[in-house]
Length: 256
Image 1 (cartoon, rainbow, N blue to C red):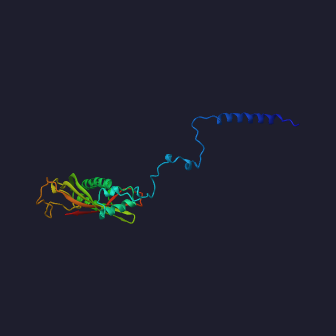
Image 2 (cartoon, helix red, strand yellow):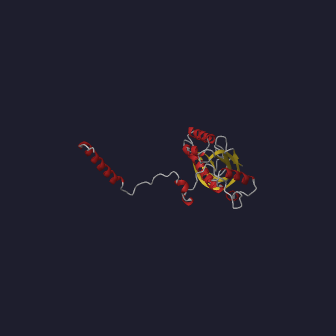
Image 3 (cartoon, rainbow, N blue to C red):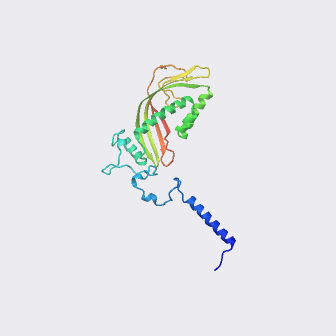
């Protein structure tokens, strides 16, 4: 029988002591331990506890109990069978988050923001709401006005009517056109503080609606205290393949 030398015995005893100490520490539960990772846990989770998949890239159209597509939100704003209804349904098919009534309210707010930003020369706000082409036109008009030392003092009265005029899909681009009747009392002030012109609403950038004027800008008719209704036709667009959820103004037109 072989006997362990003294050094080997000391090493063995030390190893046993370390093992017992580690076991004493690792064997205790602190209450903050994480359960072991189970790669299959997700497949065994109760269906009611699973998170809703609201972030799908492609959302299937909602259907009624009889299997037909649900266009209730579209039919509520445009009569079924009309061209506008068909266009809005096409947008709805491409983007299930599209709700015409909610879009209309958002567009009305955007309209006021754009008109007010143009009067104030707020280029930052305009850039976020307009397409590049339309924004370039607005900024050019603001630059010309500032070069002449003029400013606009305006009061947005409100929108008395807003309705859908057209809707269509162009590939993955959704386009919705609205007809808006608004009221805006505004005055352009020159660098000397004199009123250059009054107008009730801007049809485009530098076109005056409802107030006949001489070429030099002097008012020859009209009442600056009278609020006139002016109808604008604006088209908003959104690229559905983009991560950007915002609609932008891509075209403006004024109706007589």
